[in-house]
Every structure is written in structure tokens, then in C-alpha cells.
Image (cartoon, rainbow, N blue to C red; front, side, top):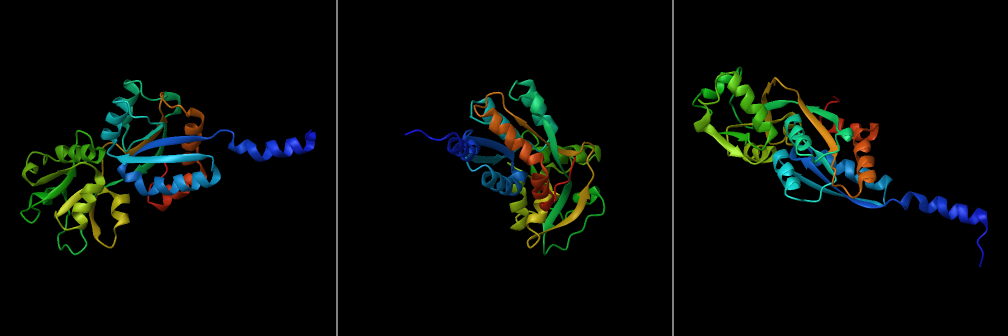
Length: 249
């Protein structure tokens, strides 16, 4: 049976959006978990032929995963240093690298805490017995925190108090459960648990808390990965990021 040209054109028009289908693995910093889950859901509604697999952890851990051969299409980190390492290792298509969000470093405490911080030196007080801080070797929030504490001349003095965590959400959980007196987290993380934590102090950082995104060279769905990255940077993606407290670069 012959299909008339007009009917064929209509069929092609309907199926065209589904011609480029892919499963896209996105490895994103732990602090992006909630925002990226929502962005992924919105993206899949707009491009139902694609499936987003979201993998979240500390940025350094994500980089090690891809260096060890994990199949990843997109990397979204919480600092420039980790993405610089990815570029140096030849992991990313550098032409696709973009900065898409800004955050801020804060010191959080359990909601019912009576403690206050006017200056970083207050952390030396015996009232602050346990302080959660991400591992600076692999966790960007840990590196930002270590840098400000070193600049203030407090890093070595606070070592006996520091409880090292594997990612920023672990630090947040420790604070929320009252297992530590305070913790260095991002403002966006503290905002997620306003019923359990409060911000004692916003801590200025020498380097901006800047989030880069890039498509990996190994991606077998590069076109679709670029489409997702573009969606993150689009007005719809930015609206979600703004909802969770991330600022525009």
C-alpha cells in the first residue's frame, strides 16, 4: 500500500522528536542533588525519548569514577579546580565547559542551638566541640572551608574538633541530627533543612563558589548530552536553580 506524501510527512513530523533517543548519565556534585532531580524531570517531559541517570557525590569522587572508566556523559562540579583536573586528564570536551551557578559558604548549626558566631575565631571556643567539614582532598566545600580557615590562621588549631565528611550533604545531616555543634555547608544546603538547621554565619571565600558543567569526551550520546547541558543553562533550568538558592554566574 502506498502512503500519500502528505500522510508520510505528517508521520515523520510526529516521530522526528523521538529520532534522537539516549540514556544520559549525569554525574553532579552532591549539593546539586535536589535541583538536578527537578531539572532532569522537566527535561524528560520535554524530551521523553531521553532518560537521565543522575549520579551524585562529592566532585572529587565523581572525577575519580570517570577516570576509572565509569560511563558518564556530563560532569557538573561544585568547583573549578575539579573541572580543571578533568580537563587536564583529557576527560571533558573543553568547548562545552560552562559556568552555570554560584553558591555561598556558610556555617550551620542545629536549629535549637544557642551558639553564635561573630567571627571565625569564635570556633576556637570550647562551646564548639565538634565541627563537620568535608574532606578537602575530594570535597569542594572542604577545600573552600580549609582555605578560609588557613587564611584566618585557624586550620591547625581546629583540627582536634573537625569531623571529616565525604560530601556536603553528610555534613548537613550531622548538623541536622545534632551530632556536631556546627558544620561548613553551602547556603543552598542549609536552606533545604530550615526546620532542622540554621545559618550562624555566611563565610566569604577568596574564590567564588562557582559550578561548571561539561560534556565528557567519552560520551556516546554527545548530542543529547549537549542538549541537556543547554537545558540547565536555559531560562527553565535557571528557574529551578534559582528556586533552590543558586545564583547566576
